[in-house]
Length: 60
Image (tube, rainbow, N blue to C red; front, side, top):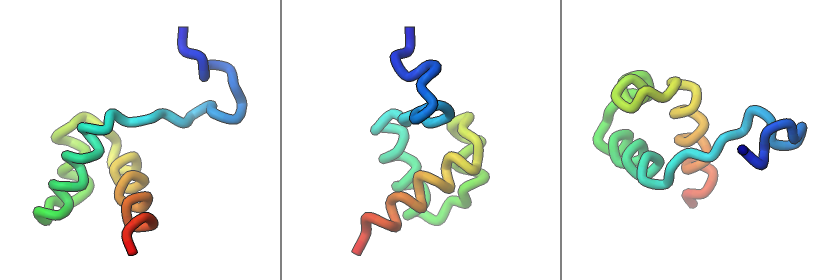
């Protein structure tokens, strides 16, 4: 059973596989639009957007 299930602090928050995140970042770097990246990996484009935004916050 998922330990986060039912926890109001983590409800709706899911960690993405680090390999997928790396692939998403590489594809963005190659110029692929977020909607195309999402379709390629069966991930909603807003999830792709959140990953890209988080990466931008970490990049100086």
